[in-house]
Length: 261
Ligand code: LCV
Image (cartoon, rainbow, N blue to C red; front, side):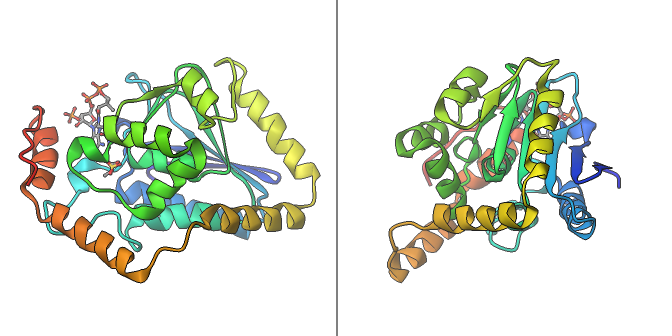
């Protein structure tokens, strides 16, 4: 694989993002390889998957969706069948725990990926930012639910509306991270936790994970008309000046000028 390194160690697999020139941005190539890697893990009856990222000089775990691959207007890049959303479904559907091991900063859809993992362990160089508002993107309901479920309504709003990174200590306090470990102990501590999980019944662990998934996805039922309204609102944003402006400003390395239209 070009962008994902796979290591199988008995019943534990380690998948490492490796796209250094783009700060491990979730390009379609990298995401497709992650999906393929999870399928290889299933075929090898892996019980626990550790998700890591190759370190880089910028200390970025992942810079999120590859902005150069975002459509310029008129198309939702985060709809149900888009690669990143398929990856999130695959993580949720994997038969055992998928555990994120984080050093450095996590951005945008990579933050949603982290929120979709079953557990997150990190060191104190980690930070977590969800950035759609910064580049004019309205996000999607399942992604927003991941954040509400993890950190609660007010904190999720703070993360989305400010697009500011949440530092490691706050992330642990808010429940984004299960535990903070010292940088030089992180890998060993997490591997011990993975081995502990492997001592337990993989069938039970798998079914318990699936129950967590369904229960965490339940929410107050939303009348169909509201689903339609939300998809219409998202369409309006994707057709807007501001959506184009956000992406072009990033590419031109300048601050965006939003008009609210
Ligand atoms: C492609 C990149 C990227 C990148 N794509 O280094 O969640 S949503 O809805 O927003 C979703 C759509 C999403 O995930 O959108 C992407 C959200 N990600 C971000 O907003 C992070 C954007 N990147 C940054 O803010 C900075 O690059 C960080 C803070 C990550 C690192 O800053 P630093 O100064 O260390 P550079 O900005 O110089 O980036 C190094 C190279 O990586 C590219 C960037 O264009 C640059 O390439 P060049 O050297 O060719 O100019 N890069 C960074 N992020 N998401 N490419």
